[in-house]
Length: 268
Image (cartoon, rainbow, N blue to C red; front, side):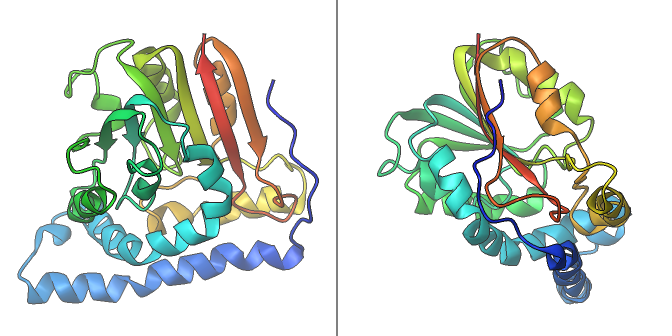
């Protein structure tokens, strides 16, 4: 069964305004995205709104990703450090802000990591961070969506020791379907490491309605991120697990519009 959240001090009502601050940070990068695309004669972002959002988010996340990592580090580091083993699937790694945790100094039991990142604007920084982490010979960027790992990238059932999803299942299309497709790739006894946005458990309270309202605009500013997905419930239903250790993040509660679940699941 999922673990219970540890008792800790929760943030107060003013925490409801935190999403507005994050949205303003993202909005700031609209102008630089347009400006640098024009002066570099790179008109690909203007071919479609999806291309523009990819370029916009890539520029924004190159700045904000490390800041996000610093904020989440106390919660994510104990999860990832020394926990991944063997052949790993790193789903949606973005610019690779967590790769230092997989470096040989922190985790010598990893033999190969496939970084599954469909946003090609992230690839240069992702490869750079892989090299910085000492993973140049172990880290391979896979430029397709998680939904294409079997059909396009050729990954086989039972070929993966560790799946890593850190704040990515909120953004991928058809997440429930993809979770079910990733499950067979995991070996028996393989581990799925999780740190994800989830739908607030405080439905019927103010934060439940506020989360739904914020989510009307949030995906446009955060490259498709949906903060109302019951990802933890989808993971539990993906298949048979011999061990489940998922819990709410300490300190998050009824005033958190963007709550998380953290932990791991081990396949039966």
